[in-house]
Image 1 (tube, rainbow, N blue to C red):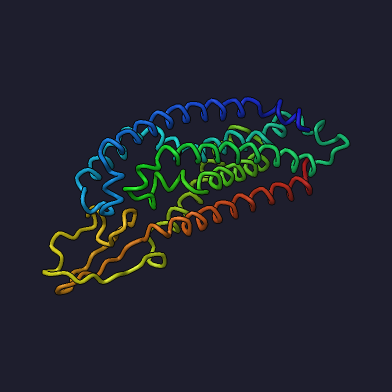
Image 2 (cartoon, helix red, strand yellow; image 1 turned 45 degrees about the vertical axis):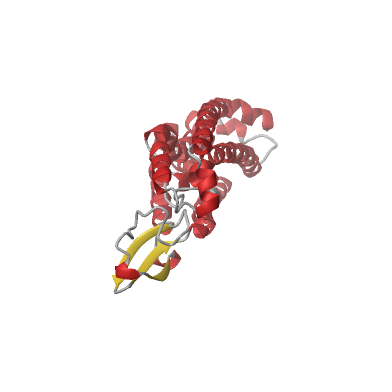
Length: 296
């Protein structure tokens, strides 16, 4: 089974390897450049001395430089990797067997069809987890200086830091596997799997967004209603770099700040990852159940 699975999926494996190498080269170059600039601009000393309050201009310059066009290629990749790669790997797993009729030989051997599918799923999903986890680690390392002075609660960094990328890829893969079984056509299953992937992606974007249930509110006293306070202040009016300030309401000599604390990052990641995994697991369980009950 291991040899057969490798033979059937080696093209996708080589694509993943090539993609990882390309992203790693870019990430190492970007991370090295970012660290050198961070040190040259004295941001480490400034953060240690004043928490960023003493160098807003340097922080703005650093964020503008590295949070824009220079990171656009890898940001775009992290948006499309789960949906496209999940469809490319997942759709042929059953769709190709059914489309070509090779299931009549593959599923009539001594290995039962359910065991055949579970074994293949374990091997392929294991490879996808390793791939996505490696991408997450290398991009998180590259972006770590930027994370110290910017917000990572929103895409694109939210999509490839934490557990989001791994879980999103598994979700897209599960939906594509189910599409391959139902449509019995590889190309059609790829298209259907990617379209289906957009539904959980939109749901997770909504759930993990700055919803009221995850935000905090603080009242800050200050003279004249804090004329310099805004949602784009550096550092944020909450005093903690990484907080996402959503709204500021002025009330006499104080302001009421509605914000998403940086400490909620992992809470949102686990919610997003859990949603992805639940949908992907349901799709794979349905595929296993359908395969066990009918193939005609």
